[in-house]
Image (cartoon, rainbow, N blue to C red; front, side, top):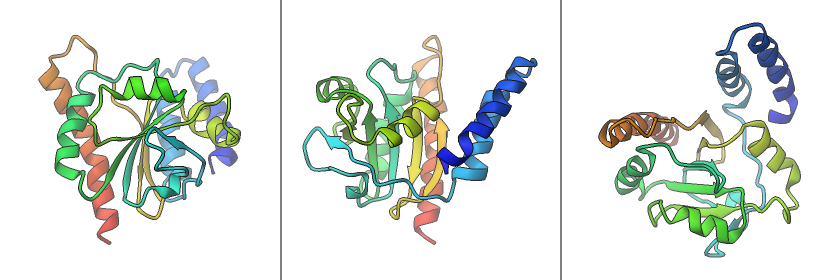
Length: 194
């Protein structure tokens, strides 16, 4: 669905941005997600896990909160603290997954700042055969993003990760990140309980 509809949304977004509507990028991203991507199935693309237990996305058996990152990204102020709290609360019934678009060693190094219960997957663009998926997920949607995924691999939401400036107090930043992620988790819980 992303391959079918992204170019149309991108063209409209760029046109509006170039004509002074600088909020158009976020508006069109949100429209693309809500009108075309929510409710579709995520492809079962090949991934590698740092512990060698997961080889394809469908090897994840629980509902999942996927975070797409590269090692050059800096997690938002408060994001790691928020995730640590949420893993303690929800980690028994769902998976928190970090997908790194990097080498194995970069993925291991980057993931050290996250909770040890986060499943760490990586896709090395130089050696991966899933170039279509990489192009779609990383290059069309951008990073960092989060994907809320039902047990059946239905996409419930895709959103750009909340970015809180480093000057904001860590407690306030954590609350902002908690609010954003908790909304996705609530949607996931409601979907799974239908």
